[in-house]
Length: 117
Picture 1 (tube, rainbow, N blue to C red):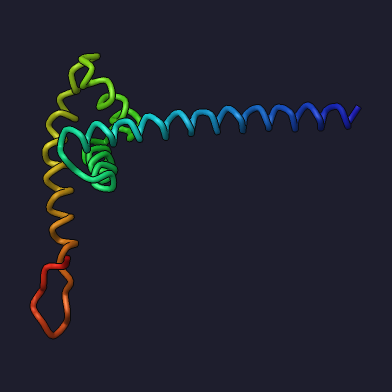
Picture 2: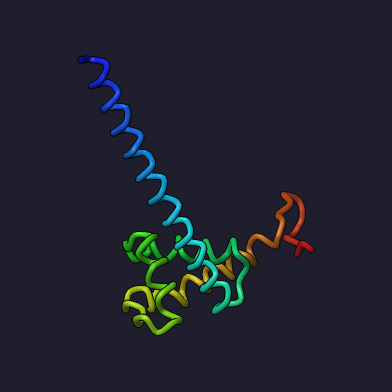
């Protein structure tokens, strides 16, 4: 029957959607934990920690989820950081700090930059 086939297709689609959503939730939790590692180790704010993860991923061609997984396992002695991430981490932290300093200045077309706040 056509109705049963449609129901089976709909059920399969819903099961796939649930699987994707579970994967997304797991990935989000892993990324949040990695941000926690970065902000703890480097003394950054959460938004800067997110920037560090993105910077490392973009500049090392390593997927963000993989960067996060490595950073979460690292403090517990689960495994050393891969060389590419270990090398990129201090550069990404410096970049986040410089970006923060740059954002602390407002530029007025007629005046010199001034420090905010």
